[in-house]
Length: 193
Image 1 (cartoon, rainbow, N blue to C red):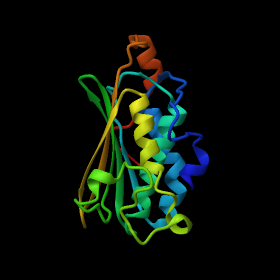
Image 2: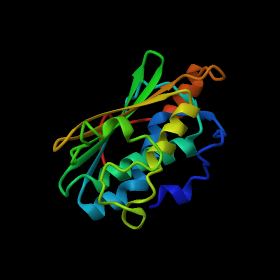
Image 3: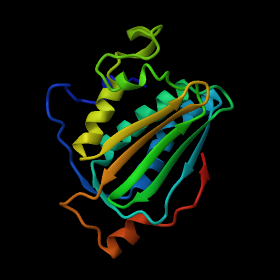
Image 4: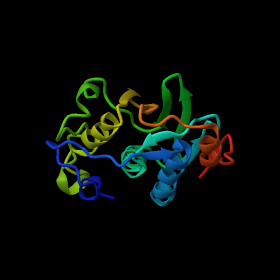
């Protein structure tokens, strides 16, 4: 999976979204489905902890899925066999949060301020043949910000990393209870993929 080849985003142009009413649990489940083969091949366990109380959000589900897949695939790369990656959704006072947490190698504190910078690689041994161009997290951040959201990261070397995406309820969409119930569907409280 090469994120840079899939996403038609030029670093200097505004990202154009096609937002629709969507359930963040369904977008996240789609991400898990897209990453499950890579996780199985690596011997990493994927876990999904959806919040059944989430309201529908106005998002570009294709772009958001690409962002979540990139974070999840990075987590798979940096999590040893037998490790766990948990995708978790939760309601927030202003919208919703989706987290991707892993039990991987973590990111050094010196690298954290730069991981969203273009062409930056925390792992200096990687190059364009072994690890992409260093644009993936830059594009992830642009996708999140285009949704008027924000992305945060916490990491402890040797213990793992958590990426947290905050997405607001967009002003152009306020979910009705009928739209919410039809989009949400039946969701288990915890799923192992």
